[in-house]
Image (cartoon, rainbow, N blue to C red):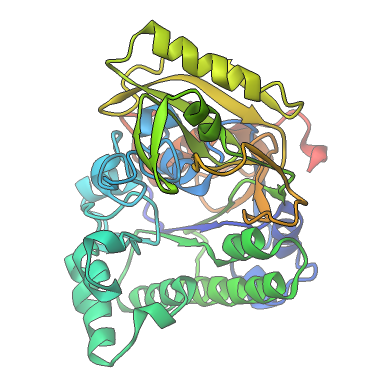
Length: 424
């Protein structure tokens, strides 16, 4: 069993150039961060394909399982009116054992801050930062109800008593503050923290804007605060994981408008009411669901409507043979896929296709690109010391081995040596 501690950091929106700059000290606004944890860190390539959005990818990372086995298939919960079902917030949605579960069984201390699918998990210090206001009166009620008892007692209650307004505190700032406090109090064997502000800024404002530059500096501040408090020794591990690379939006697709035109779903004003078939967005993909009781005619009608849409040069329709039981009520029969810069929407009342430079475009300005590789940085005992590659799930298996544990639900084999190390 490894006696060292582990710091697992996930930073949405951190591109490969910036990340490798952190490692090499190039254009890094905070050299202390490089000196304390990322100097000499080894690059690990996450292959294209697999989950496109951060929550499903991070679920695969902490389970070592493919997205089909984790229970967290998309960034948004389906059905939308029951976020407790297959939700990216609640641990009960997870269908595979996690790193947190296995470490706790060994009596080791774990922490998860803004990490997907952790609300209600057996994690010592858990701050999931759930966004489920329809089920809670306010943000304080939501935070206190979904965080672990120790998190509430040691970190949240003192802030509430001091008059802190959660709606006015950026989530990444809260994560960094609490991580630093927790690391300064007691030993934590695994601390997993996710920072989402940089990715949110990229999506909302595009590339190389003042808002993105501010978000980059804020993210670097948060990273420095956490890593400095962690103060890694030689026996400790640090793993920095970005999301998928982000690219400018080129095409917004609303496939449910095509299904509505064929009478396969109904709307109540601009909202969905009921459906026989529905396309659920997953970044640059649209997952085609049908109610399980629907027969072949409905399924073929849905595919026919979407085939017409997929004649667009940037779209393709891929049939799915093993999508039975995707949710409690639906099966998945196909996936609509777009090229880089495509984003799928849920609306059934917007125009089916909107080019990214349309003056009335109201979607994200940047979106994830699952066809591109991502690069993580790793340092510490048990982690690869030469360039290696694999999936999000492979990365989870490799981390589990470094921690001296097994992931019973894993479907991957671990990161493997990369044939062309010079490509990084």
